Length: 110
Image (cartoon, rainbow, N blue to C red; front, side, top):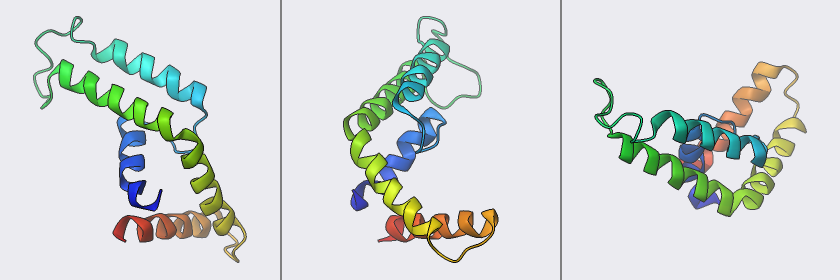
């Protein structure tokens, strides 16, 4: 899972969700985004968008499939990270948040 951390984070960013989102929220968000960006609704795309509606929909579907296939491993992995962060001596939410970011960043850079 460590080598896929950047892919996991990218997929969740595509869907605009947190890695702690439950699977039903992920499914609902996928449906909302596909409806919003469906090529039949916007055959010519948007003026300022760099992706065509077809490409955008493909990115959404790929992100959803990746998350769906690896959901249990993602939850286990990020649960372990969260447990490590919460059991440290960081007393404020800001400190825990920074520590969580540091732990995730360490795996991304590796």
